Length: 344
Image 1 (cartoon, rainbow, N blue to C red):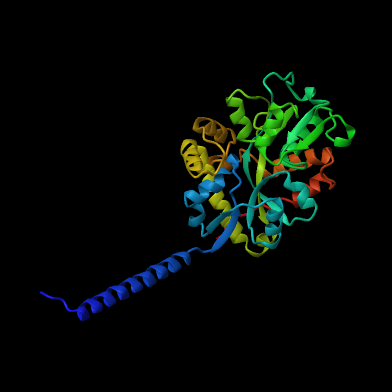
Image 2: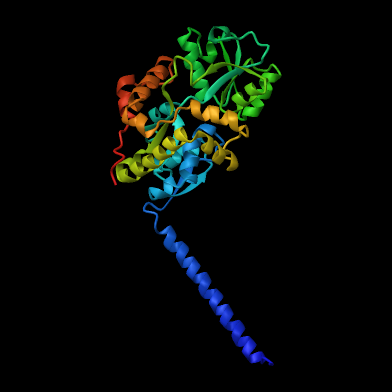
C-alpha cells in the first residue's frame, strides 16, 4: 500500500510532539525531584584529595546528605574561600584541624560542632638519616605545606614540648613551606630539607615504597593519640539562623563516620574509584582509614572521645607555644557549640 506524503508528515509531526511532551515531562520530573530536598542545594568543600576527608565522600556517595535533605555540590576551596563562605553562610560546614583556632581568634565566625577523626599527619626522613626523634631536630630544616598550617603547628607543639624553640627567629629549627607535597618529598630526597611534615597519604605511600622512614605519627604519638586532630566547623551565622540545618548535616556526617568505621574496605573502594584521594594502594588506604578511628554510633553513646575536652587540650597547646593569645579556658568554651542532632 502506498503511503501518502501527507500521512507521513502527520506521523512525523505526532512523533515530534510526543518527544517534546516527553522532554517536558522529564524536565518536570527532575524539577520535582530537586524540590524534594528539604534544605535545597549547598556547597561543601570536599575535593582536596585528602584521604582523611572520607566522611564527606562517603556521605555524598552513600546518599547520607540526601537522606538528611541536602543536594550537595562538592567544591574545591582554599582556606580563604572557606573562611569567607563560613562567615557569610554560603558554606555551612567544613572539616578542619586546630589550625582554625587562630583564625577564630582573628574574627572568623565559626564554631567547632563535632569531632571528625584522629591522626593523619606523619613526619618522614630519608632512610639513611640519623634523625630518630624530636630531640634530633635541633638545627634541622623541616618542610611543611604552609607556615601556620597544621603540619607546622603539630611540629611546633612537638618541638616545644621537648624544649626546642619552634620560633623561626630563635634559629633552633627552620621551617620551609612547599605548596605541593610531591615537591616537599623531592626536597627531602635531594637533601634540601631534613624532615618532611606531611598530610596522609603521601608520607605513608613513600614509606611503603622504602623511600622514607617515619619518625612521628600523629595517630600514635603520646601527645596526640586518642584525640581528635580534625573537627567539623559550622558557620556561626547558620548556627544562629538555621540550627536544624546544621543538626541535619551532623547526622549525615555521623552516619558516614559510623559506616566507614564498620566498612573500611568498601569505603576505600569508593574513595579510590571516585578519585577522591591521591592513593591507589587499597591495602595501605585501609590501614590509614582504620588508624583515623572514625567514631561509631556506639563510640558516641559511650562517650569514648569528648570533643570539648580535645578542643580545650589543643587550645592550651597552641596557647603554650604562642599561637593563641586568648585565655585558654574561656576561649575553648567560646569556640565550641554543642548541637542537638535530634532537632528537626
